[in-house]
Length: 109
Image (cartoon, rainbow, N blue to C red; front, side, top):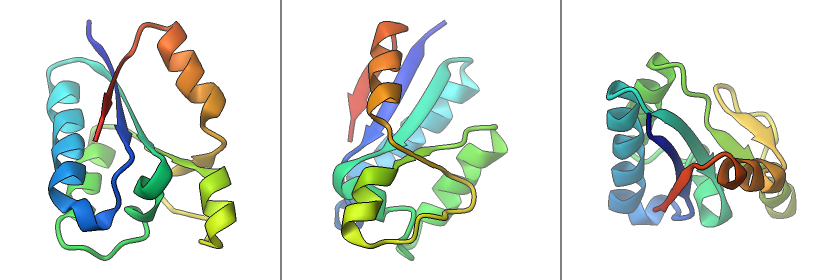
């Protein structure tokens, strides 16, 4: 079984990149892959964005049991809210290392 970590580094202004990553996560999950989605760098702004299309793509992941991780450290430094319903807000460094240790393929968007 494939193990894929979708690392969303792009912010809302790079909508095509973000939606491509979220769509890949959905398709991979539908095909039986173990999938993690992590919002990092500028990507932490995506869950906060009202950009059209993001809510639908994120809902599709939620329907498949995926709970995306959002980097707490970046949210803290940006002054953004730390409570994001439907997401796990955490310090993702150790999660990223664990994913590599466990053989996940990291795909960055």
